[in-house]
Length: 292
Picture (cartoon, rainbow, N blue to C red):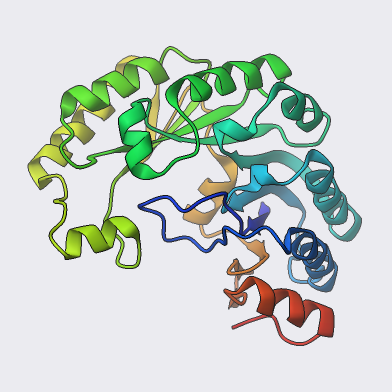
């Protein structure tokens, strides 16, 4: 099984903890989408097996219109042998208006991975997220009603000053929603992030290791007793709804990464794309190397 990862390098604003490649300027979004479609054509011989999974990651892929997403998928089908089993779109809850979900359901996207992170509005504000808890709850329910019923949500635990009670409240809401996959990550102070700088300068303290461990153990227990299988350290699913694309990474299967900063592996070589939107677009347009 081979997979294609599409990196969409745009966000409305920067979260305090995120160190992925993105830009908050959408001025060249159309140019990046065009370059992604061109790169898909240029690299059509990189994989020598059918593509079974497509994953739109970022960044915030839900900043693309349904038409732009559909055009990228069409470019994949045009240039690769495809036996599609899973097509995931990472999405922010505030992007998932009912009208957008209706259009998205017409594409080949059949799985949503929602970056909810918390159902606590105070924590969401501290994280500099663009949604609130009610928007997140409504987005999950609306997505399910739209027909995209393979839904995963992300949660972050061990935030500053948090306790087991906080993860308990988050899980109580999460487990009441129509989701079949849960990804839960321990907050980490990455060096170049706002949160990392706050920790390094002593403005804020990370959760104590014992506290973080207690939150994790509670998470595992509560998810398990509600029918979620822990199949990877941070990932839980119901009824064997594993994240097929991500599971292929852990099983050392081949994948092609498209877009700025994306990585690729075909069993014999690993490649990395330029980690700069303008440089990536320029290289694609001028037919020069877009690898770093």
